[in-house]
Image 1 (cartoon, rainbow over the protein chains, first blue to last red):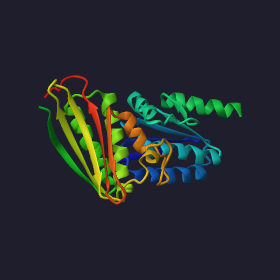
Image 2 (cartoon, chains in turn green, purple):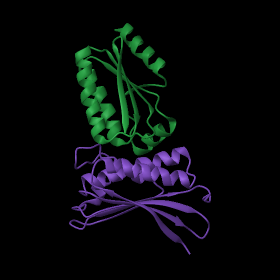
Image 3 (cartoon, rainbow over the protein chains, first blue to last red):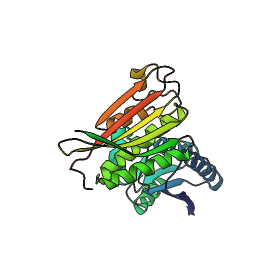
Image 4 (cartoon, rainbow over the protein chains, first blue to last red):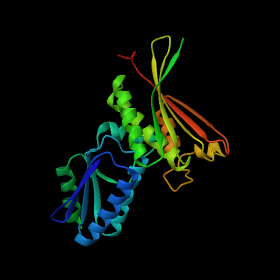
Length: 120
Length: 142
């Protein structure tokens, strides 16, 4: 029902989420991704959500938790490509996700990750 | 005369049923011409409430109703009912950030904010029925 792919792009994990995610899918993704960050020593995680027509509180929390766990493993998380209608709905729901890095496109997200690496 | 028509009913037992509810709600919202932003709010509210029905109500059902008023306005209403333990403190349950299940505590309060109408009927031991209504901005095209 959902198709999630994780691709290693140099030292960034590029994650694409598409379709309908169940809560179980979301939790499985979090576990897989966090394990992957540690194994690959990635310094960035880029999550492309442009294929999602819905982000509810469960998925939003999962994204937030992925970013938190990745930060503990020395990787920065950037969520890219959120659809405007999803952003409007999340804010009205009460979820502004402070602390979660965002960018509009994958290219901008990569720039952001590379930029922060240079500043280190 | 205001007429109310039940267009779909979805059982909520398994986790995948939450996805089924979202899909059914999306389908009906599209069919009566809700905008993309409104569809997204509807489906998100449905997702939050279906999860509550499953997790807190130990399962139940979602009913999708269309209400047509005399003045030509259409309201899409989602009614979630369960025969679970009910809610003892409704005010607390509607407080942002309050969660009895380790979630974000935004399901019920968030769905209420997303909707135009909100109704909650519950009592300890009597189950819970939550309904949210979304008014179509223009007369429905059918």
